[in-house]
Image (cartoon, rainbow, N blue to C red):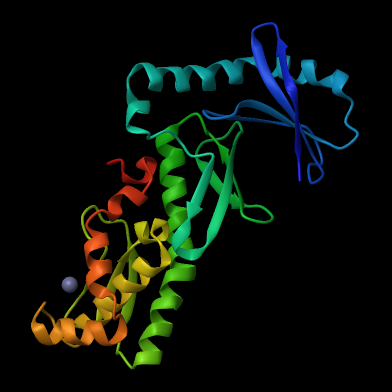
Length: 248
Ligand SMILES: [Zn+2]
């Protein structure tokens, strides 16, 4: 693991030094939550740090200004800042996110080691960061939610012709008459029992394309607590962080 040193200040730039066993070279990270963090490998000569910070002054100022502008414009009131961590309760994962400025267009997302996500590129552009993160969420949902749905389908003998993962505003899932089930990627943020309930809910629509008494009977067969779960779903949007919910 890593340990933070005491806060330091270089003239007007304050920062924290973090020693990381995994780091091979010094790098800078800025997030709204942590501010500027200098990550250095073990045994790194700390006398070199002020020079590194000074050489990146223009970038640091630019990123900080963009954070300040959001605060001033009230954007932060919606809590829509970029995340420094992402908790995917639905699949039991918790990712740390860092942002690395690189002089190139676009923003890429890379998974690094155990549940660490690195965004690199034009990270001062928050819209680019958000859409890169959403693309990653979609891949995560495809890797985890889709197989989970197919497992449930095969255990209980439901016929599913295709699964699609989407980012929807007002629906958690849907089922077409052809047996295509869509899942909202925001399910990743829900408690696992509610994720399972939505899956059962949609799977039962492959049998009944309505909410009839017979439909709910089949739901009850696979999720005896469905009434409680259905009620909890009314307030489930609160599990989704603002940076995901924010309209594009
Ligand atoms: Zn339904």
